[in-house]
Image 1 (cartoon, rainbow, N blue to C red):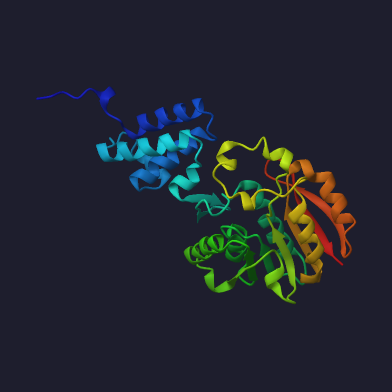
Image 2: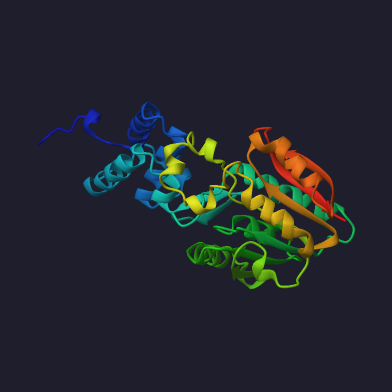
Length: 294
């Protein structure tokens, strides 16, 4: 009878340790988390299950599927795209290369609107519009946590809107979000909202040169680049936003930390807005512009 040596058995514990080390050596972001996401995806289980059965041996088909994904991840293809999901605001969103991968910094937009709406008279049942919705993460998280909100989401990409609608169905809020195809505020007609929120393209041409390959080579360029100084889309949004925000109402926009001073100056000289200020994200970086419509 053949004897199998323990070191020849690729258990969950051993696979995770090997992948985490491999990804660290290839400078992949969050190497341990990436390893857990890929293995859970291949095994068809939640990440928690990996730790409940760490000595489970992987079969040949599982190892082959994992090997293929590890090779792709090692070439900086985002793990979120490889598994087709990304976390945002304690929810899981379907993602494809047609949409940006939602990131923790954007959660600051959701946190601000939730807190402001709950404590401010007149905002308890807000109308909200999410411009450049992408995967729908902001709009859907707001709909999930503000049950009295009426939400509209727009995007210039038909493929992105398809993913956003899919995510809205997944999280049970499809009946409370209108999705519209069009450029920025163009689909809104003469409608006005208590909050206009947006994570628009804002990477400048100069900063684009230093963007990590997992972003530059795989995420949609249309949703990333904002012109020579990164503010082209934000300028357009500021120009038209006031016509679609109630008084009182708020504009809430994400931007790059390096643009803090330029964003403030831009907002302060835009007619119809006051009290422009900046919120810090989870890393305490200046990332979110808030301005009151007056």
